[in-house]
Length: 546
Ligand code: ADE
Image (cartoon, helix red, strand yellow):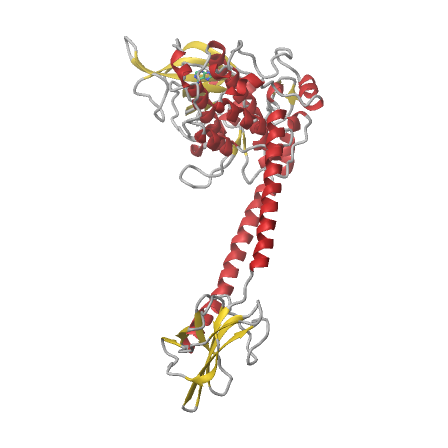
């Protein structure tokens, strides 16, 4: 991706230099063109103006002011019964009758009363040609009322800004240094299998396994076939007998010959993986996590008889994104739908707002990869496997974050995770590691899209390294060689693919701070909808999924 970045840099530089020259040139010419003002210019003379409303000075003489900095002035006086007016040019830098002129940038002459002269005195200044001919009088009391309002509102406004700033700083500090948690400590990483351990292993044996479903009876579920196996658990397709639906929205509904059922997925954790089950259950139990691009959670159960812990979720027959990409070449339209929905899922996870704008705890996944993403019936993605997820709530201390250490899958680990150099002071750092992993998944999706030209067999990112590369070999590729999966020049003939590749490049930047946010990636995808030069490919693809 270096050529892309290089050309973007030069375009930016040339643009900046040109704009700089242009603005300099226009300033110079403006300076040269500055002209002296035309003002009404009559010595003091009697006037019919009454200092109420508006009036015309009646001065017939227009003069070119002697200096370029001069502005037009009108003065109205009433001494005894003697009412006079004079119109002049004057440089506002200098005081006039001991008064500072503060309204000389006005385009109209707004006469304001000034006290302390020993007689009634109005003055105005303005700086458009002959602007001191028509005069607009403001009564003294109105002027005073406006000043009183301004004077009393400003401190209130300042106070409000201070309170808001203080509250904001307080919240940021709490997020960074929150109070230490009492229990719980995710521990160590082991080659390509991250292990989470939890001292809370002795948690109650109650069947109130989750915060959503407090039924004491286990659900009538019949396991069908195993559909997946992760590092902590096995996943089964299963039948949830009708009449016992939880939370709605299971997988594919169905009606058996004997009894109606709903198809669900059951993730079964053995006894020793209790910590992982609990972590995932706790993350899923946050109702604010619900999103169309996050796997729909139904309930959690402790199956004590078999010493098992279950998570019951929606079932998606298309399986994981990795399986889908292995089996199918996809169209540009599919890429756009898969990539956009993935980014929206991650953005929702990371967000501290629900779609309605309420506060929500941001969550990081920490193990984003194509096998932890499911493909739904409408070809959108949903994130699953939150066994390593982390809630970035106020109660997390820096020590606790530090202890959470190097977790994830080596192949998808960001450079700063590989070197164990995450900036623990800033919760954004964790989100940035997810964005790096998401970039690799976006690359996988793109590598199987017909719009890139010749499409090869599916290969994971850094596919050439051995099947489960260890941290050390990933360090060699990602840190020492600064390697990233290849984006051949032939891919970027398609304008949509070109934008996707530029986005991927910004997401796997070595510098975590330079990466895009998931929210930004989602927005980029929204904007890409019509970059579909080769849309005819969409029609060629056939799906033979279950
Ligand atoms: N593999 C893992 N989780 C799954 C689910 N919920 N549906 C289908 N396949 C899966």
